[in-house]
Image 1 (cartoon, rainbow, N blue to C red):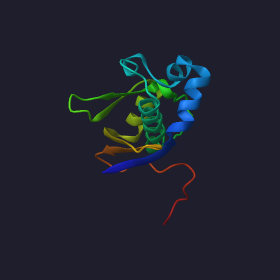
Image 2 (image 1 turned 90 degrees about the vertical axis):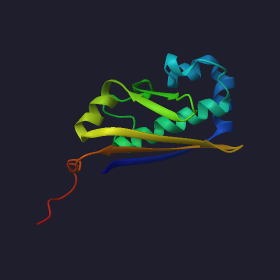
Image 3 (image 1 turned 45 degrees about the horizontal axis):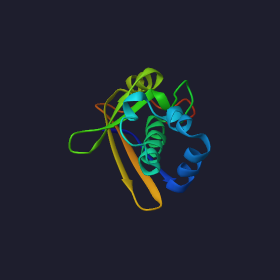
Image 4 (image 1 turned 30 degrees about the vertical axis):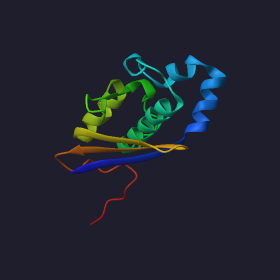
Length: 135
């Protein structure tokens, strides 16, 4: 059962400007050490940025409840497919939802990076506090 879905689109030029202005500090703010191996191009960083934004949307939290960019590692499998690991508050939220798997896709055009994340679980998640009781 799908417990959460998140999508994000990022302008690669915006990430390139941030990388020019802040240098390696920008990448260090959003990437974990295991994500910074190799050449950090604006396209690569934009894809990881979009992935993490999509992941917090799929968790239903945004970057709140103690969840930050470093609570996710987005790495590539040998085939090149993105795979994510959750840490800290993001992992706790996944467990709270009853999540058993996280699926992630990242794609790029010349101008944009887009990512979609799906949180999957065996049962329906608990209703948020703001939903009224029905029945």
